[in-house]
Length: 105
Image 1 (cartoon, rainbow, N blue to C red):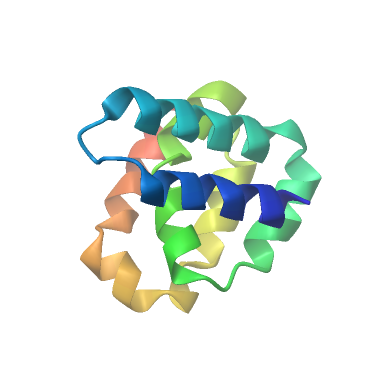
Image 2 (tube, rainbow, N blue to C red):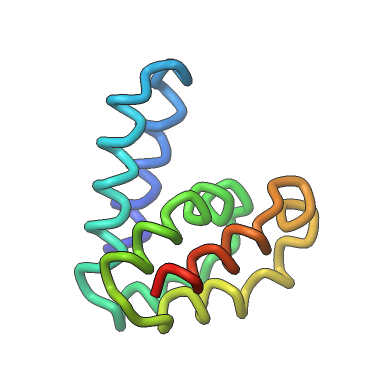
């Protein structure tokens, strides 16, 4: 369920103008709501994540997730799968996003 909804949100992000920050942040907020709705489902979704683009888009939600949840369960699960995506990890500086999210808890 989460996988389909998350993919739909990513597809919406792909369609918007990058300069349209209002629409962008509305969709990111929907991602955060989706990923914090049921932590167990989210952990399963993260562990099965194979799409690099979805991995990158999810990184953009980490700080908001950390601020909302005030626990590091989702962040740790995300961090655990980073080895699957070494190119994205380097290219998008995702380790820094993870560290910043941890500081927000």
